[in-house]
Image (cartoon, rainbow, N blue to C red; front, side, top):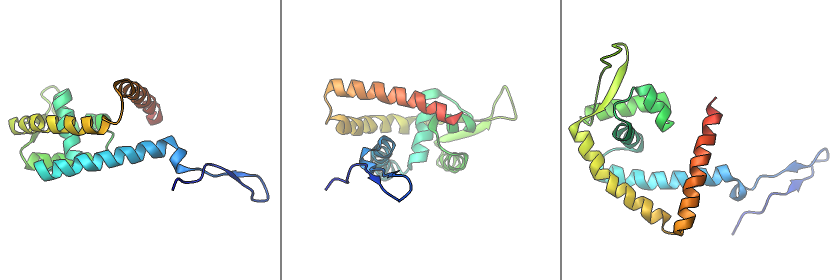
Length: 162
């Protein structure tokens, strides 16, 4: 049964607007993202023995090349503590190495190992398959529209960080 739509409630002073979560775009985006992330996370944990933060770091390094931890934080939008814990585990699993930046010895840089690169190459087809299944409820035109809209919203979300 759908939740009731937004309506005003009289409090004696001024009318207070109620918020229907089913009509609130940030809520819907968060629920969809969390459900999809949990589904993919379960796959990665069962098949590859890694969790979502570790997957995000691996994919960031695979996409962008060597990165400093603060760059991983920026790209993945994860907090520093989560990146630090996931980074340590990836080093323990020998999927990532961490070493000093040759240009700036004070800066740490994360690199994919051969094992990490191989894992990324194994993960990508499965991630694409999950993405295809998820998007299969949309027509090609709707997918293109969704992609454009999400890209614009992603860009807009950068303004929230200022």
